[in-house]
Image (cartoon, rainbow, N blue to C red; front, top):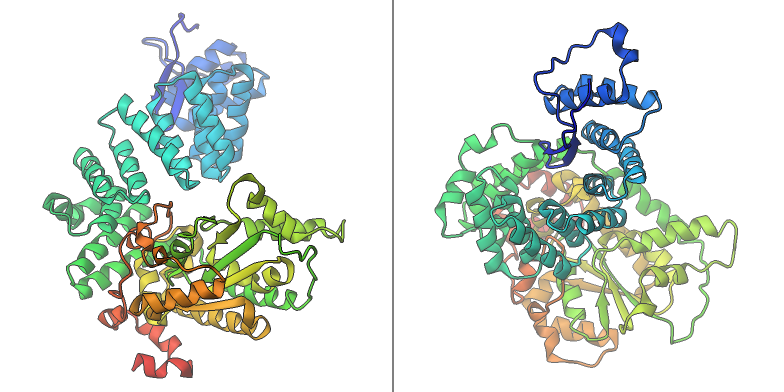
Amino acid sequence: MKNQGKKPRINKNKNNFQTYIVPPIKNEKVIIKSNLFNNLSREEIISIASNFDQNGNIIEATKYYQHFIDRGFSDPKVFCNYGIILRNKGNLKGSIKLHREAIKIKPDLVEAHYNLGNTLKELGEIKQAEISLRKAIKFKPLLAEAHNNLCNILKDQGKLKEAEEFIIKALEIKPNNAIALYNYGAVLKDLGKLKKSEIYLCKAIKLNPNLVAAYYILSTVNPLNTNKDWQQKIFDDEILNKKTPSEKTDIFFARANILHAKKNYNESSKCLIKANNIKYTSQASNYKLLIQKSKLLLLESNEKQIYQNRQSNNPKSIFIVGMPRSGSTLIESILSMNRNVDDLGETTILEESFLEWKKQIKINQKINLAKIYWRKASYQRNKYTIKTNKNLYNYLYTGIILNHIPNVKIVHCFRNPLDNILSIYRAHFAKDHIYCSSLTECAKIYLNTENIINEYKKRYSSKIYEVNYDLLVSNPQNEIRNLISWMGWEWDNSYLSPHLNNRVVLTASNVQVRSPINSKSFGGWKKYREMLKPAIEIISKNPKYIDLIN
């Protein structure tokens, strides 16, 4: 039973991952008696396994692939095919191992590099995923899917210009690919090219009316888009059929954005509740861990470590902290109008540095947290002398930062708690912010953040600057001047026009930050008073906010 010399065929499964399938022998019946199983040749096992795989009988295909490996046989096609099955079963590490085995045997096997890159991305190994997809493109320059997926990886890293180059190439290869059109629209949105983004998102929806992620992004770019077809489609309950929880979340958030823009706040509330309930129940919340972590780090910061190298020529760092949607993106845009400032965005390098330092200090008491952080922030690799870091959860590390890193300033952003909670609840955050889908947990985190920052302010009042977002948008000239003065910088009128900043913005505020400073959202919580009752009940227990709520 041999393969008659036929060439292997590349298939795609439902997740758009390519597989390397050996075609079945024509008219062959795949019926194997158990007593013959161990007597099959290498070629027979491959043929039967690939036949089962191609016809969707994954259970039987798995048996034969595993038997092939157990017999000590090796074949790049088998490793690649079996790796796909393991990936679809959620065994990402097993899938990665098999694809790497395939590459060892055949280093230029495009499908193995492509599949490996996609699986590494899902596992969070972004850098390695990028390397694998670049290799796939190297061996097959016209593989549109690899260009497309590499675009996504680069986008997630903030490399938007390069991401745009790869998605344009993907569209040159396959102009009518709805996924690629959607990805281009998403990249254009992050680049601030909102009109062009809108055009490509509409093209994606026209080609694939069930591509719900495109509806969601379009609803953030322009919820009142004049093309009525897409709005009718998103409100048609048929679109909910056979959708995953993630897709349903996108649909309800998109509906909520459109209804909000139309000032139908009651119906918008209903959609927000549905979207956030689906999201909250599909993933585990981290709010208790955040509160516990804030208390532990507050205690740890009591054990002061005097940092070394206090000289004024040390790098300068600005940490922007606070709740999500508290104005931190706007503050970073204002500060980065200074030509000496490099904005790192929502990077996790502080926590990474802290964990590395805690591990190394057990061996070497002289290890320096500041130097670890500066290395990760790449101070020595470019012209910038000041770095801003707006990972909001750095508020947890306020004491650690101020005890260990010289030439540092912290800007704490805050706003009306109910406006803040509403804005958070209306946002569609990534999985790291699951507590944001619970109004009660959001309120508890708000009060915890405020309490923790207040404790640090008692110790380091001169190093922490408070920015009240409500005052900032009501009187930007006065508030921005005060901020720049506290920084010790020379005044420039450009600080008043952060919307003209062409920097990359990857946060949920990347559309709003492209508009001039305004107070449109001030007091917006009152339009959602009924929906916000669970948060109001918690916030009102703090005497500070009784007048605010009434």
